[in-house]
Length: 91
Image (cartoon, rainbow, N blue to C red; front, side):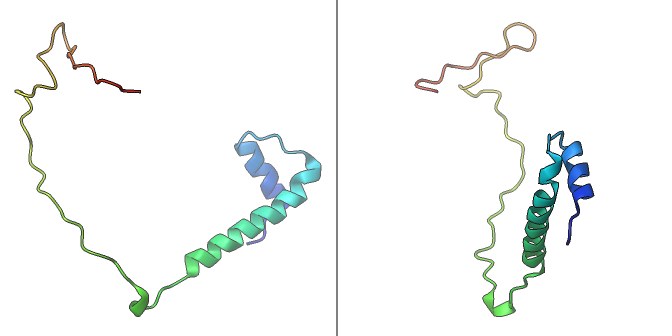
């Protein structure tokens, strides 16, 4: 896909980039090359023999868990505040 200087100017304006007029042509060539690579990647197809989807993911049931008696979180103090114990050596 060929990109012209007008498109580069418009993209730079949308991205709020200051791009000097003398660099528009150079950036247009670079952007065209990037888009050509993306087109090549998008059109790449693997044969059926080359596909390796790996093991199927293990799914767990989506069930609610009651944390009301958890030792990590204590009862609310004032309003909606919750006391959480300090984590040692946390950075």
